[in-house]
Image (cartoon, rainbow, N blue to C red):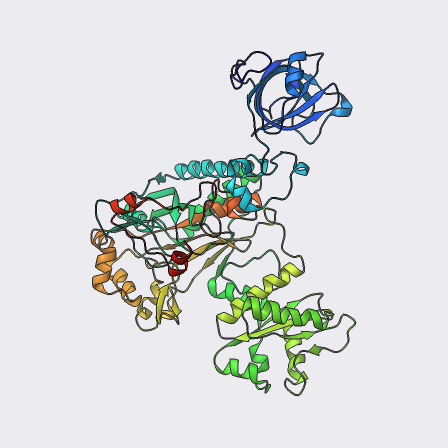
Length: 619
């Protein structure tokens, strides 16, 4: 097919572009330029055709007029959205009334003298114009299926460029602090202790499997044993777990390890990195040092180990006030060592019965999973306190005492949850977040204030009732607190870990610890976790052996790069900051992965597929 110049469609005779579509300014007026890109919008005003030409750098208005070039003008009449074109023309200043202040290039336009259509485009399944008002709401499933179109949207391109910046800042920062970037294997040994591994069958070793790494944890510890001293890596990790908006089966973390560290050294190092990232991407200067808070305090005050501290609504323990009240629900909880946790919500003391019933039934019971809600309403007109529990069940003197201790005032609503620890704190924390959203206290994502917090002194272990044993709260290689080491076998639930998380606005963006570096303590840790000597040797023998040859004290942290970029960008999902993400069902819709493979491939890998009955009967 030939264009009206006689050029074959797609043959570019203009040579390389001279400028990008976001580059031209008044200083370029009078210059002849060559621009190339996509047709974003086309406007035919009868005798003059205007094209907004787009590339990842921006938009430039192109004007086609018969007075400038009759042939180019006629060819421009064929242009449609997303055609790829090359334009040669002269930069002209726009008249004052046509200046577009929304565009960086809005003071100029290019009067086209020549046009080549490099490629055409079929009508798109959804619009991707840089002009937001020209786009329509599109399902995420459709956008992910046509991800190459979705990625043309300026918002997603900005997110990926922001991600690129974070990579550069991170590498420069750690290089300046004498860290060495070392790549660790992607095909590793399966050492399940936490999330499910993704397994990769070995063709050369029938019946044996590699695992994709959940993190480079053991390799980075080995690098410290090897004397590398300071390691970092921007690394891909894999976990086969249930997904949500802020979780992906494959994700990227900034992995850091160093020898002879203290917790404060690691905090200072990472605060410097975060400060550099915020300064260079957003122009925000973060104050340092970041606050510190123990796990226990975070749980008691905010009902979370990743508290959002951009607003108040702190939890308060109020159990002692109700001792001897005769209210059986409260008395039973207190007798069993539980707690009654209160939340004072300002300005909601006049809520009606319908609202309170919905809060109790739909939020507290269904969403949060608590047994029920007790509440006191303090009317704004100063009238008598209303209790959801009748006077003869919970005497008013206890209600009055609780309100006084909590410092509640006229117009406030007091919400109470009762239950075992730590469950009741977590439930109250979820209720706190719900009420904060009700009061519009939660700022939009990606905007100040930026409240960073180090959460420290985590429990080393957590008890799993269903499994009937302890699990490591972080991972099995976290060092117990030296002062609690003697409790490891006798009272493991009381042992603190030398672990820490970095939290930003209610999001955990990093977690780490000082590691175990002695073989004897590592073996003790395995025994507490129910891993006997034989199993420990089979699964972790290489690490235990390495510890016999002068392993130095070491520790580090892993930061969630995807999540950091998501928060910086103000995006609602990790999928908006990853080029080719998976859905909540773990599918990559553009290439249709995962997919079936041929019987020949399975035979080569010595694998036979047995589908669940429901899938087999439906196939």
